Image (tube, rainbow, N blue to C red; front, top):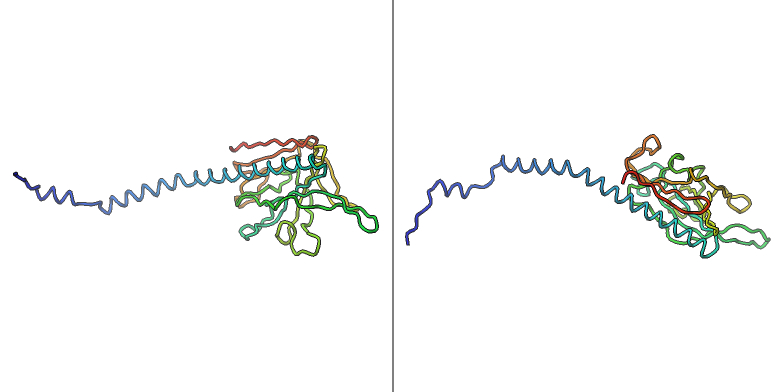
Length: 238
């Protein structure tokens, strides 16, 4: 059988790999693709965390309503305001919440006061997600925060963060929702919010104070009817 050897030039071309210039071109293309796609990917991930945090809060609101109706007791939802627990953000924002059953406690002298019993564990919002403190964005949580303290001399309150404060709403057995104020003679002051100001807004923490004049593209607003307790959502950025 006759075998015709390849020309030396053909052998040299077949053994030739990528040149340095070709490798640099490929690397440059990859870097450009990553530069264009990474921001979009990060926005998608942030939107997903925001949607998940909003859905979880909506579920907790529904749980509070059902519990108040089923057990015929008021259920309070506290929203805790404090800096980031890991020290990454020193701005005090609403970053966690918890449900409490409101019962009555009778002292030996006959004095009756409210007693709060935790229903579940503290729920922390996903990393990078907060509830806005601006009264224009979360009027349901506006007003002076109350000290987050526990009975028994605990150094930290229910939030687990020293110096934290909270604002709260309370779901009543009749289905209504009321804003919680300071206690008077052992009982919290409860007020109705009108429907246009009965909402809270979740948004991504982007390193600046979130306000009505400086709102991120994506946010998640939950409005609660103060008379029926029915919640609805607004998500214009989704």
